[in-house]
Image (cartoon, rainbow, N blue to C red; front, side):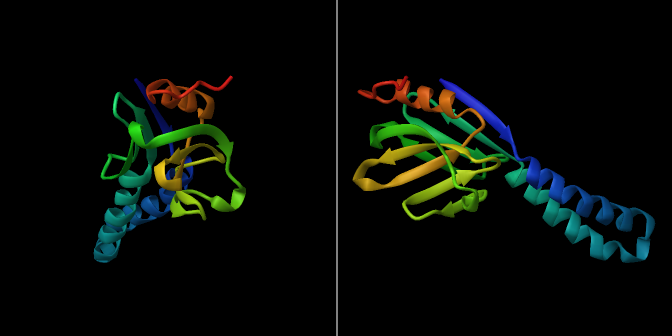
Length: 148
């Protein structure tokens, strides 16, 4: 079994000044608090939902869960045909998006693991441990030969 959590530093750093200003407005400028409360809630929710990416490989699935896990995706090991560490082009950016051949799930950086799925589908899971994640998936998938 494999589990690894990668922090989404860009999300955390980008939202911190907004949260601090909203907190200042809510606490010091009481009359403007009605403006700050929704801002605190919205950006706080973004950090909770997208502040990290946890990838888990177990006996049946590869799971990628953002933040507390409400936003997630799972891939059945039986559907995986090939796995390899890759480097995403810079313009793939981060988040959840379609990139031309499949879906990307990435919180930070350019490293990822490409998962070739049945029926020609593809997915990429961003990670700061691409070799370890690829090895864990290959070890869990029946009939998958580990890469050197």
